[in-house]
Image (cartoon, rainbow, N blue to C red; front, top):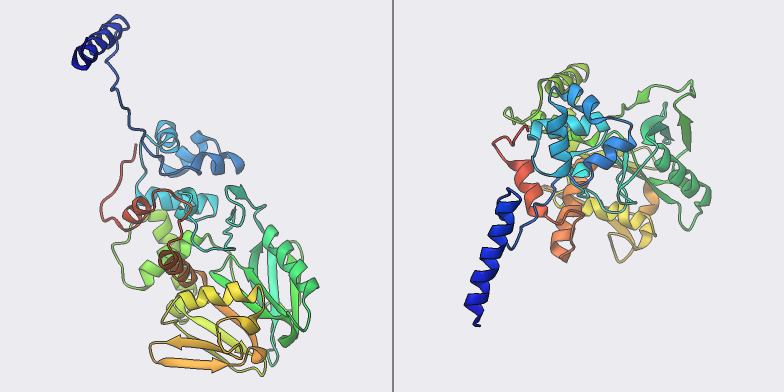
Length: 352
């Protein structure tokens, strides 16, 4: 009996069995659909939401949410952003894609430990610079506060640097020996020096705000999220929001400060990475100077003169992605191209 005859008999038998069970014959080779939101169900359950509650908050059905979770349907980008705002994270978190290597927790997601959640917003981390009247306060998660607290305790003259990721689009690189003090204030605490305080927002909020500030009037977002962005812009009227979103601010020990938008965003990732070891051997010239480069040129400063670097996480994420591409490193999501297509598409996905 030749191979073709065996194949025909196998196919007839398969169809006969399918007819008896009143089912259509399944293809011999089934292609499994990749779930584009692999962490959605786990994050929802961990935060105590039911599918019904999520559906009601988004104005859709429980069936639609279930299909998003099992991968049979995809939400629109506007719905994805609402999910991210609801859970206090970024769309990238829901898709299992890391934005910043090493450390970049949002309100709920801790990317240092894949698929694990933090305990959420904890309070504020404060830095009082030399020559400053008020402490600068930044919102942080509980996990990030605990990590930074230990780093501060272990800081020494040889390694005075610590990094801490905030919930206000700021990765901080701090030379603890060049500031007057650093503080940890829980949410239930109080301080008489409560002036320069930044508010906590999910990372996705800053991405949408950036699109709005930079003139992308057609950005995809729900009416509720658009209203939140407009409210923020009205509250911050008169301030340079674009500078807050994209510019790195450098504070020196003598009180001098300047801001710049890095020409190469991977430079920003280097600051954070090297500060976690020894800044003297970081992004420098012969280990002596740190460079800050924008479209107009480069500035070089001795590490020992730096007190604080405030890095916008939006820009730091770009640098991290560039470094990964140059080094050929994979991202969290197996289908990275699919993420990029979704995040930059013009059309809407299926609502369920």
